[in-house]
Image (cartoon, rainbow, N blue to C red; front, top):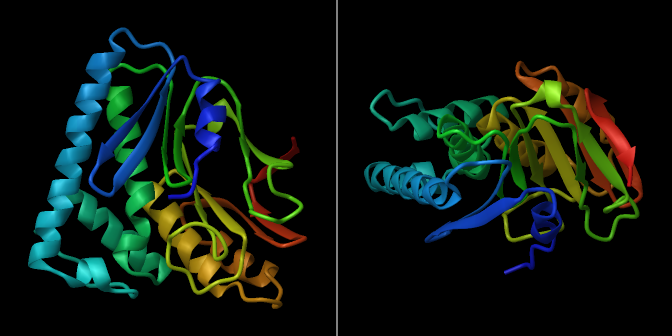
Length: 245
């Protein structure tokens, strides 16, 4: 497993943080002030298991949900989380599992807020859902690119709650057809951000211009901005406030 140093950095910002682990699901939670952090962790752990089990049961009934690399048909009897993933995949042109990490981050973060957390960040394999009362600067990690950890994305408190989802063709364990070091999609919809990050990254090859691809997806309803890095090249569209770190 790739070491997640960035979780140590994030932990310095949030007084309460912990990991939620269940089978293949590994989610980092950072909280602001909260009255009962242990109780909060227990409640969020329960939700993580419930969501995971819902998807496993659905996959038993519909295996293509797990294996398809293309959109699958909508299903009114699917659990809510699966319906969200199917819907996002249809927009992005991917299989529904391309949306899984961003969807989990959003569900967990929203539940933390419902339970009383003043601030929350949920991070799932580089896919973030942010709901904080102050501005945040999120470092852009892009492997060996000269932009890596030197450029950040400023997210204003007024923009949150918000999802930032990342896909890479050169880093991590996720399957990708692309050659981008990082593609980040900004949206209020975690499923959409995750599926589109995967789709856009898949389409960025070794040398073709990145801007036309980003511009095409920047016009999708619900997308607020996109940034892509490929070695020493960076392209951005929409409301992406880039900041030197």
